[in-house]
Image (cartoon, rainbow, N blue to C red; front, side, top):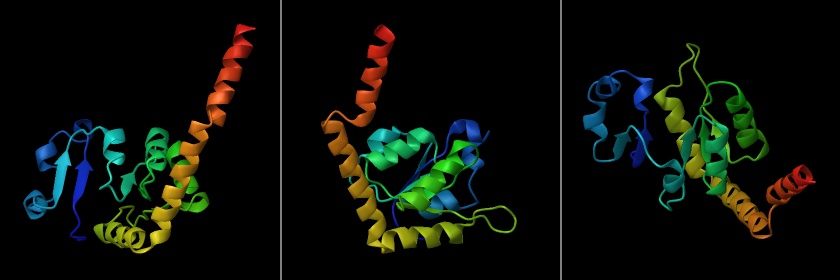
Length: 159
């Protein structure tokens, strides 16, 4: 619906028949604008300058990788910490939007399209994501608080 290029990673273990996991005609309809794969090097992809948005389950590693690369999110959590991470991304950091389920509990393609248009249409998402990325990189260059706390912990263990 967006007429934008995309990469969609669908893990093999999520469906028994990956070739028939999509609606009839979907792969043919999007073959010139989209690519579906079973695996991709996420960190390498998210660091590529052509990536404009990350539709994520909001697991901790994915959250950290998206934030450290300055990428806005569309959040699609499933359980546990993913729901908390979504809240942090959307409500606190304001670098993403929550995908809402309909009355049947399904996230419809219209919802995804609407939220993508909001993320792409409002510069604030990208600006906040890049600002956060800069702050993180500057902290790392100065030794970073996590780095310092880890070294303090190691020193404490060795004493």
